[in-house]
Image (cartoon, rainbow, N blue to C red):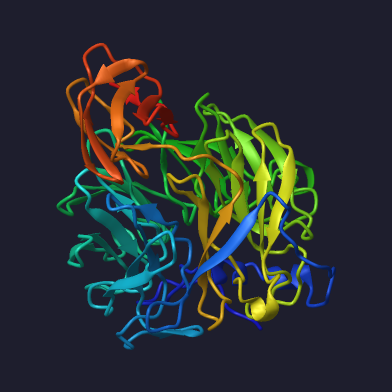
Length: 500
């Protein structure tokens, strides 16, 4: 199985993760033989459940689109293919992609099917704003065929706000993030002044400003989302380019001043990793963590931490038996980091991508202690899924949720849950605000709430539903944990709320 590297043609479909694997001929390095075999059993503390089997008609191939929890307590996501419109046919999928919702029990509702004219092949997660609207991007389709930026009302109405035309970006694989100014910021894989991708700002109405066009020397082909740092700047990665043409970590101000913090393969034999394609995460002490698709001590990818000044340390080098091609990190409420690898792990029986291994789930401490939690394709026929491409999402019930690109009963991918014993919590939306601002608090079983505090200062609040509270940031509040008291129990926010 051989594929060419990505091109820049209309609707080329180069954004899916399979093309980034193909472009560097991963399987030529991995080999097509059984390197390891063995039973794949989750550790006793973990409980794995397949919640959804995609069938094509209700969606297919959820790519790197991490789920998001809505105000109604349901989870929302996108699939790269499938749906009711068959005008798109790409790789093993028919259909232009979908927007869907599921509940925690696994009941799925397809909310929207793309038809190419308004976008196709959504690869990225949705972003929920404080008014409950969902915003997203598509890799292809739209007026010019290079992808779109859209908003979606959970009731089912989709509005295309911007169609990329290559000069302002092309093939958008990353979700947008919301800045302190209320605008959205994102990256495009291709396009811009030099064809190597862009960083852009876009208003909620769809007016786009290109902040930076990569020229390869400062990075090329950003695939991942930006992360808004505690210092107000954005941090991101590029898959290629930089001093060694093997990817970078960069910082960019809201005004568009870009600084390359690190160029990969700066160490002997690329022991620091190469080709990062997933989003960075920032921990409360300000440090950044990320993954590299390749390189490391064994050439199967790495997990690293990097300071905002650019000092990088490799925490883990994958060796294929514990995974390869890491697909993103999530900081959970226990302070540990959870992640997934697209391939590798203890089962080598997957052949759909021409790769070795079906993927694995793992945990790593902030200090670098690594453990495997689950190996995919551990059920007959890969009913539990294979090739998990998205980062974990931790819901307010404490459980981790994810998707697999392939596998399941129909081969079109799955949604799954992985319980690792983490307790319920609450999430604020947004995670920052001024005194007097009304914010949303998401959770479970919130109906009996008796108090809400911001770092110990009592706030006025209203219980809207079992999954939603509105609260006003009180006078005297300082940056810290938001707590909700329910029947004598206290639920804490997963992240500190920053009072501005």
